[in-house]
Image (tube, rainbow, N blue to C red; front, side, top):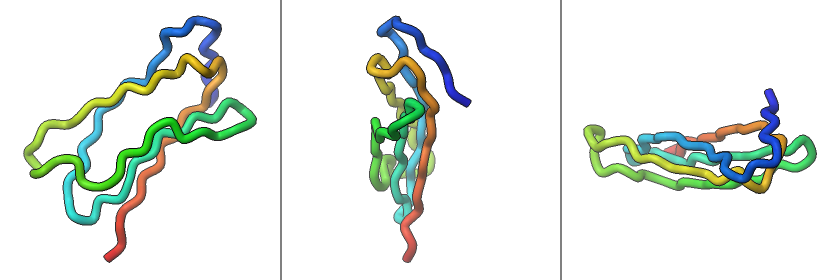
Length: 79
């Protein structure tokens, strides 16, 4: 579903991720304004050094959009 953000400029997407392992691909955060899809963040490959490592956090600024539909896309490397 789409989310109408209005005219305020303080909207953000905050999320946590854990990407450990030799076959980790990439994580993308995509914003669609109803017309155009824009990749606003891409995280590629292993980010943690062990399975026990803490999750990492990220914040994406959504101030450029007033209507958004958020998508995440992840891939896994194939050996």
